[in-house]
Image (cartoon, rainbow over all chains, first blue to last red):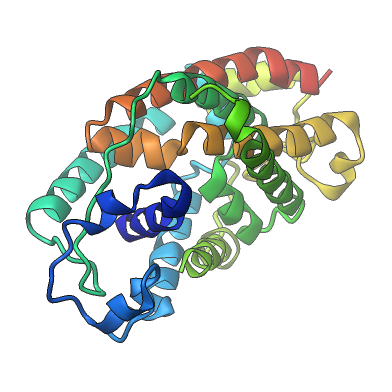
Length: 184
Length: 124
């Protein structure tokens, strides 16, 4: 997860300049992956794709079995009629907090040997979080799913969700088009 | 890498939702069943209501609105906010990031608006 975010940052670098955040703290004795520049994980010490696949399988399995991908559960949560979703968040948060602290203090390298750096999010005026977040919430209530669960739903047999995935990609693409004229 | 991760999520869905499928309906609260029943949702057998999420439903205004409209809002909102429920709501909040707290509050506000205005609109 963290590694994914890192690589996202690196990809953003050409326009965002975020690359400094992600690379400055890397050790000088880096594995040969450095030769590949923006994609260090392709280097000799990079973990195989199967590692990403396996983490994805675990994530998808838990999303599905915990029923957080269920439209019904989302409705129950937003109508304040059940504890289920709140219970999941209430256990996921402490787990993630401990996980993040461990990644910062103990396991500070990715499997590929890169330093794990979690870039701070830029607050700016905060508009993007408030407005973008609200728009996301509207979609979350309608589809009953956020991006990860969309793929888990597809796997669990809701074929038509592929249309929602394509539509979500169009949404992301539209944001890309409008990015310059939107307040952040 | 991201693609391998996403492919993994799909496989995880297959394992949990098909291979080791829970045959029981999602055990939501009776009050939620009643609220949704009043809106026209009567099939509670799957993870999602068949009234909205089937290929047949896609050809109805309700299904089109929920699937295409909802999907678009999710994609646009996630990109605009710079993260989703797991990115902001769990990882960001766990890292005590102020932007993530704002985003999480906004997710919930949007979700409430969606639940009480857009969902009834979609099911009309």
